[in-house]
Image (tube, rainbow, N blue to C red; front, side, top):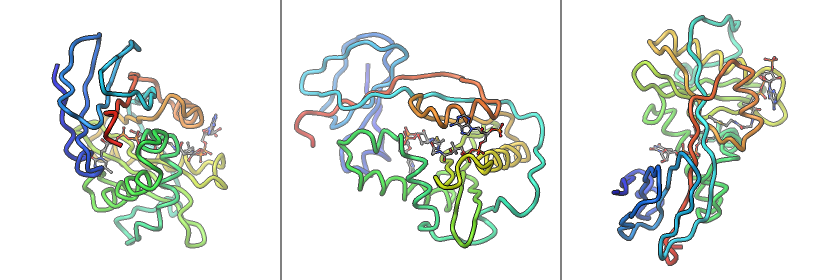
Length: 229
Ligand SMILES: CC(=O)SCCNC(=O)CCNC(=O)[C@H](O)C(C)(C)COP(=O)(O)OP(=O)(O)OC[C@H]1O[C@@H](n2cnc3c(N)ncnc32)[C@H](O)[C@@H]1OP(=O)(O)O
Ligand SMILES: Cc1cn([C@H]2C[C@H](O)[C@@H](COP(=O)(O)OP(=O)(O)O[C@H]3O[C@H](C)[C@H](N)[C@H](O)[C@H]3O)O2)c(=O)[nH]c1=O
């Protein structure tokens, strides 16, 4: 079984990073990778000489068929294409959206690198390299919520979504998600998928409340080479 090289991650972290999906225990040539991201459908033990398990999560993908447009009301949710915003405007919200990210919770990366990655996620969403659309809600010149949307043919995917902690539970997240759904439907996407961590109870409860169902779950583990940190 061969490890799949991840060019973006390797370049960003200046480490040799790859991933592999394993259904059962089998021989793997670890090829001197610094970090191997293992994806498993069921949790079985892996013992690779020279590698340590540093992190484990369950990634859950929610999905919803899109069959009607929502009436959002005009003016509240804005489109970043209509008014240029600096990346700084979204920074704190991006970190909030990533508070359960493996890049933050696996301490091997360090918080500074997590922030840099999520800063890059915002930049690459606004410049359309890693999203096709970014919507946000602004109050008193501050972003209080945002959502980014990716497009894979007729499948839409939420990249990041968050509302500011002081504004959570007030209906803004729902407005953002409904705006994303309208955008997807208007642009040829029949379904919207949302990946998050099973451990993120707040987000999972929110998605279920919005009519999303679990499409699949996968266990993700980080194996670092002993001497690579
Ligand atoms: C793809 C990703 O980015 S995954 C990461 C998601 N982001 C985060 O985890 C960051 C922290 N959390 C948040 O930013 C927000 O809480 C969000 C985005 C998850 C939800 O946004 P909010 O503005 O808080 O949600 P909002 O107030 O619109 O709630 C909408 C509905 O969901 C329900 N809901 C919201 N949070 C919860 C919760 N924790 N438990 C149960 N129901 C909830 C509300 O009761 C409401 O129900 P209603 O439609 O019947 O009125
Ligand atoms: C900015 C950027 C990133 N990438 C690459 C780098 C990684 O290989 C993936 C992102 O990995 P993922 O497992 O999706 O990361 P997270 O665990 O942090 O994300 C999950 O939780 C978030 C909160 C969010 N909901 C997200 O949708 C989830 O998947 O992307 C890239 O190729 N190009 C880039 O610009």
